[in-house]
Amino acid sequence: MGDWEKPLDDLRWHWGGAYLISFSGPDNWVAQRRDNRQTIRADSPGDLLEKIRADYAAHPVSRRIGGADRPEMPGCRFRFEG
Image 1 (cartoon, one colour):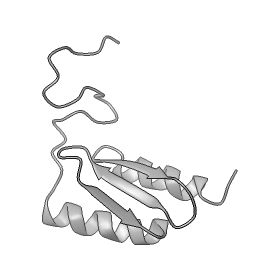
Image 2 (cartoon, helix red, strand yellow):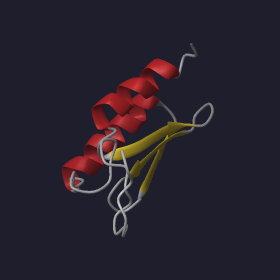
Image 3 (tube, rainbow, N blue to C red):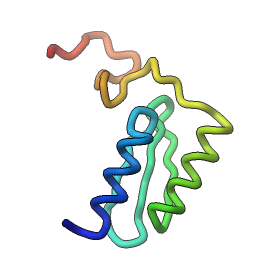
Image 4 (cartoon, helix red, strand yellow):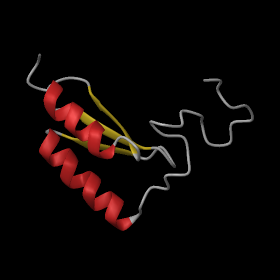
């Protein structure tokens, strides 16, 4: 397990319903809002967490759109089977 896997799992566990969260290399942590796809970038998981909290406090992400438990895209004409 890499040093980045636990922080990534933690961020996804707590914020994955509102943000698509990824890690793509050293100093490259990314969260993308599920409602409007706005992207937040950070150099560390702690920095990304702070930015997510600030972003969410300023503009909460609607949980009625596609998310971890509802993978359809906003405005999708057909629902995924499953």
